[in-house]
Image (cartoon, rainbow, N blue to C red; front, top):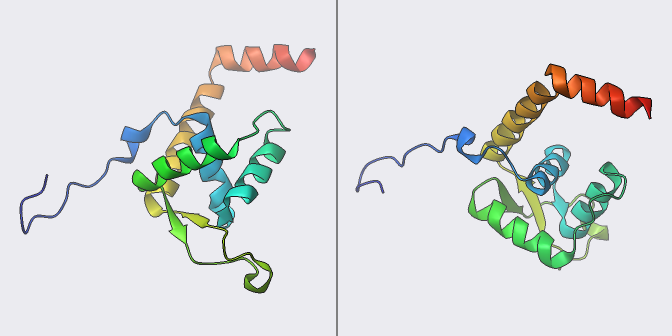
Length: 127
């Protein structure tokens, strides 16, 4: 804990790695625009061809944790304000969240570039 007058220790983005898959999917969904919970659920289902379908209880537990970690934040912005339901809670990715998501993307990219992963992908593509 920082003493009075001291700056807090900077958060090391690497300390969040590896990300849980659902965390990474939520961060990816927020890179392009702020989203509300239902929008996140729809976008994640589309991006994963329906493999990942988040239940509301699970989604909001994850959102609460990502907010507490400083990776996302509540947002007052609305994509089309006049068409939006004011009860919807929007979220945006933070600078730390962007950094963590980028690091996770690079980590996964490096993993997939290994010889065993390439062989596995070739085998899976042949079936």
